[in-house]
Length: 330
Image 1 (cartoon, rainbow, N blue to C red):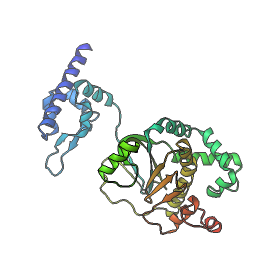
Image 2: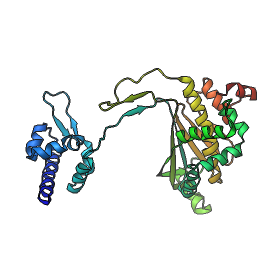
Image 3: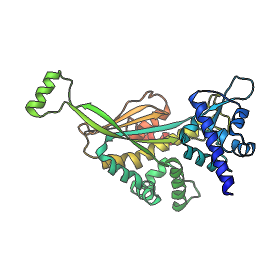
Image 4: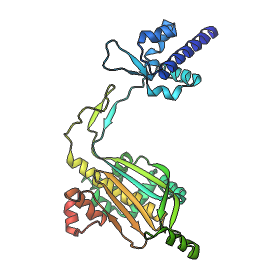
């Protein structure tokens, strides 16, 4: 057994060296070329389908089947990593199916990195059901039910369970990154004037500041297509979709994101001169909280249509009467 394992390790090292050479020379090769280099039919066949082939890309537009070393090989270029990868693949299926969502909403908050710890604490609490229920209780069931209607046969317990299930499906996590930025602190000035203001009155004209970016992505409606191994993302996506369900999901994502996330974040970073929230996807706009102005503005890409107007009424963006809002509830 020890002799066999040593032999297998040696052969895997030979396979690794072959792939390294093919990668460096940007050469294509056949399955038989690879087999001859390994010089062990038994071990080659054992790991061809379960390991080797997953590190290769097929060359299209040629006669006999040929391969090149794929990008997946980049994560196991060392011998030890390569051996662990190949042995770890044995007996596992690494195929994926692809679910495509045609309609998404993407939010990105931008604020000074000094708030990172507070943000993580606030957002972390929203991963738990009891926190969500407390927020819903604070909003009041009548308001929440206006936006997320109660089914006639439901009692409050069943309703809250269904609501938590919907929220749990939509709000699964966030990502956070840091970027370096430079900002002008006032009106545009000549260089000499800016320097004079700094030396005479200590007024900073430019500020270098690290910014934390918090990103949320939400899918709306059902998946549009399910694809299986071999799908490369280039075919036409289906055009048929349930617009009513998509619009309803978008409406509810907007409402609950605003109530559960936005208001919590604004309170946690209270005192900043400005807070920016960029929205992309089904609509593109910028929300700015300004300490001086004290109100939120939205600059939409396209403000026409009932979907935008409905959300505008909920968020106080534009003018909508109470009766108009009531008639637009999903």
